[in-house]
Length: 314
Image (cartoon, rainbow, N blue to C red; front, side):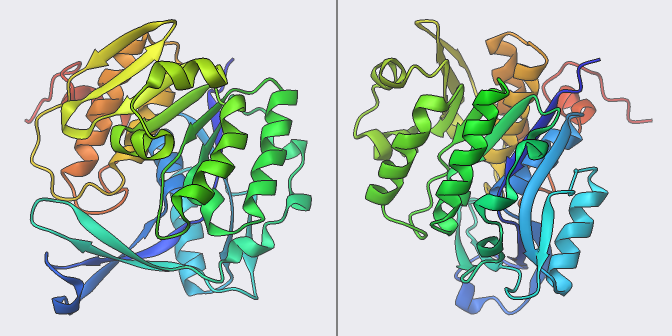
């Protein structure tokens, strides 16, 4: 029986969410939570019913234990998460505006990922995995992470495991030139490319998705457009779906939710249009709730939101 098992690698942080909107200097209290793009993706996948493995390193401290136990509680395989006695768990503070947009202030250097070196990666890490998901955030945090990802890619190709890639561009962590140079080494191995429309233009200097697809032979080019929906370029044609109308209160994590739902649809062999419906719905749900992953839906919640299942209130 097919397990539909994904694996991803990346840093998780303790998140401090502001209790009110506006500039961070005027916020006096915060609520502690857990975040990080790759962990959000793993949580989103697990809540939809996929088996999820998360590869990482955390500080062997109280915040590290918070994250580790939280991930375990979500049913995520943490057998390849190590605890570092040398480096503290990373944290970040969020600033949220009234319209749901915001800024992130990271305190993640030196990162415990410094101890997750390439020699820790072998075939057992990808045992029974059906898809490997890579995020550009992980690539940006530590220079040696690039070597780690390359080894994972080599193993995935050897084991015939498809690879999804979200550039997740973080210009607070590196320059656009540095990101472009590293991503160039990733693209030829990617099966599913998932990027925001503005992010795509920053990376390639244009919006010519067809040209990029042809250059790197990427099977599926998924372009996220936020409130305008999303589109996929595949087999020489475009398939688009509109966004769901919502009032956004916090957009952080919406892209990770989109990725998880799209990959859920991919692994369940849904047609492209249905994958986009699921992905747009998951992204919208996350944006209606404050927090990085608090709004990540179960499959039932997602299907109720997009109208596939009826909600019975009483």
